[in-house]
Image 1 (cartoon, one colour):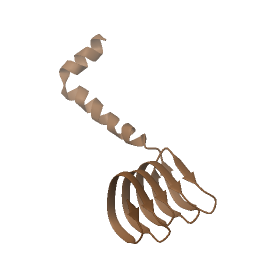
Image 2 (cartoon, rainbow, N blue to C red):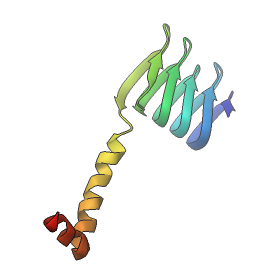
Image 3 (cartoon, rainbow, N blue to C red):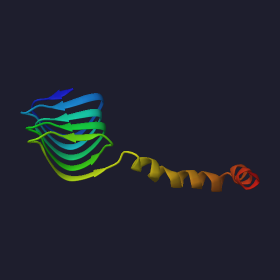
Length: 109
């Protein structure tokens, strides 16, 4: 998917999202790969993010593979995508407490 205009809101793309030099996105983006050559302002969840020479990104990027080419700019913070796995750990502990058979197996093992 390529954005050449202005979008405000939430975008979910299972492949690549390209923000062209004339493209502007304000909001939340989830995609496999995000290529920014325009302006992005918001929160981005992706496996790979590339900020090209004319690209400007502001906000939070959740990604393990971030590259910024000379001339591109990024103002904000990055977080690893694995942080979602850390958040889900307490749910597993709750499952163990609510299911006694799992608790017994853990004690015996």
